[in-house]
Length: 355
Image (cartoon, rainbow, N blue to C red):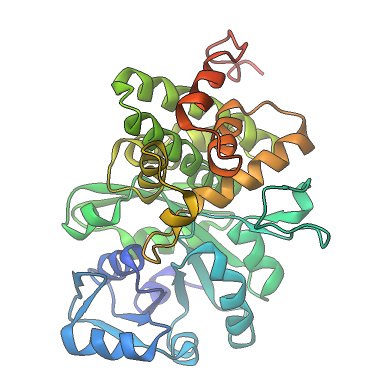
């Protein structure tokens, strides 16, 4: 399989939300794009207005509601949808995919097989093992027959990318070909593309930083200032590394764009959905009320529940995750949970570099 031939073909993007539309426009700098839209009415509206998620579409982007059309015309496909719907999408895609296809996803979430005796919507969080938790790439590999899989992650706030502001991303895969193709397709004048071979680590960076972002929103909602937020971000990075290592990742991705880069951007921006959830919680709003807004998909809420359970399986301490679990699912007031966190008996600043 030749990267030059692949990158010259039409490329598919599945998902016309804010980030999916951004990725489609980035790809359109280098190739023609088929943009997969689930709802026929929205697809028609996009065709008429040439806009999606409030963004003008490049002329060489064609909306479609047909997964068959995307898989027939596109060798490379970028799924960019909420993680909760990805398993269902793969069930529809799998019969249409062949070994020649390449999936590079931009989904920051985890797929969880909750025990049959548990109700994942309640506060009684069951114990999970690593076998019950899959990253999106692991889900692709178990639910389809393709082997060329990658992901993208980094400090990529969709609203800024839509303005053409400077930014960068990491393309990660176990396949050098996937990384090479991803670089060629995504790189443009204002958008730099790096690579990393630790796909598990890069995926976990994009997942775990959402926990810390909710916490950052809480701190701002409480008026705790920039020192407190910097404290949270630095301790959050340490906690992310410990969780990542327990799950099988290396330290390296957490120190790069996908890790500290995305963490800083998400925690510092009031445009972040996870930050917004934390801010509104600290202001006294109910979680159900906040999440009732269909335009607010905050992946970090489910991630808190999953990591809180997995931490017990691994026997690791995750004080920030524990704090966020109390706020989100035990209805502990944000200030009370923060006060409890400040009593955490931890003394070492960075404790993973020499391990």
